[in-house]
Amino acid sequence: MEIKKNIKNDLFGRKEIEVILTADKTPSFAEMSKLFGEHFKAEEDSIMIENVKGKFGRNTFLIRACIYDTKALKDEAFKRLIKAKKVAVVA
Image (cartoon, rainbow, N blue to C red; front, side):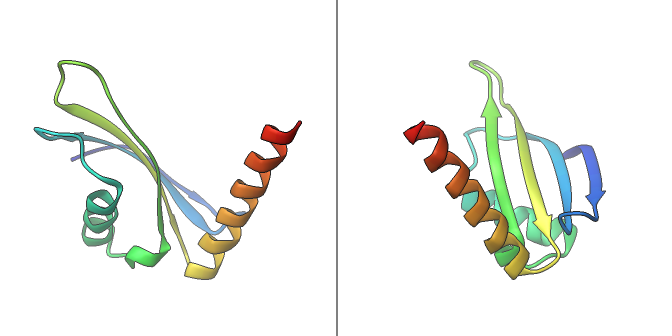
């Protein structure tokens, strides 16, 4: 696992992380949440995996995630994300 970006965002109370991972198959969000929890010593409840991107024929994946300071901050961010998506679909 190679860390490409690790930024602390105090405004939202989270760490924004980009990682390149080498694996035989596309890792699931649950597997990545567990891996991030072990590596960054954070609770799995406070980790939000944004996406896992891979390219055809390669065994490297770009994973973007946010590790929130508390589970409550993660839940609030998730509510804002869902609300924004609903507004975009309706409009």
